Length: 375
Image (cartoon, rainbow, N blue to C red; front, side):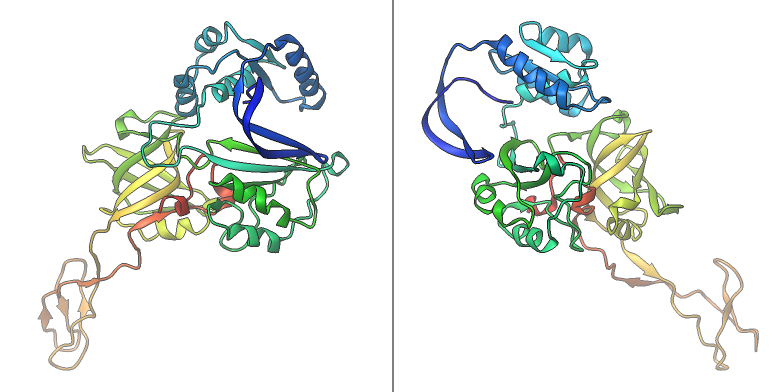
């Protein structure tokens, strides 16, 4: 969302277009502007550059839209009736439909400051754009330069733990890379490290990425498809692995209600954590509900039940090792026939630790807050 007016007060560099500086002012004063002229200029750009299967939208408003619209859009579904009422006094343009108007309207309703206390309300993304002649070709950004900027304070989602680059898209779009962090000055001061390919233009955006804004605290009984939830529960089944390396297990809340959870192959090492769960382990789960299954985006282990292992078979007084005659039956020496009670199981420590666990950056949703920003 962009605010139009006459800038006053201190100014700050927020972008460049082929050498021309773009600045943001700390304050502004009202100024008359021709909304129809602005819409005409922008709509021509959208028509000429959008994909044929997309439905982009433009909304021009004299004021910010109600913030409740943002929360409705990021956590639930905005109805056609609601959006028509809210946009009744706005100038709009929807190409090939109106889906884009919903996102544009929700962006105008986002203030960047939520009701969350002492938490991350917004982050920044500095986007570098490619020369048009290079669109569709392979991007030339080295993993070494990405690794270098990933170590800067407050920077996140540049690469995976194994070094795989996550900030460079694979699609044939104009974006060269997206450089994300909690401090805009760190991004502006360091993006030129990335290369060897350099952007011909760049712009920094205030975003809701990595804020967890999409999550709602919910009970299992209230789950519905399409929602993103934050839920406390305990493991209530063994973990099942299916073809493709996907994991599934059940959880149960304090009222005895059950739900199925999934951790899919792109989650990589998170699956290794899930493999070690046993019934009774207590978790906080963040994920999206699809087909009545919670697709886990990150999780916290809050409590682990004791682990036990079977002890060695008893040694008979005759020196031979005994053998079990079946589950829950006594041990018997095949040599002399003497029987022994089953020894108690041995308590063992778990190699799981309490705390948060997540998929690699390349598999995370943009709104999901990385664990490094939760500490």
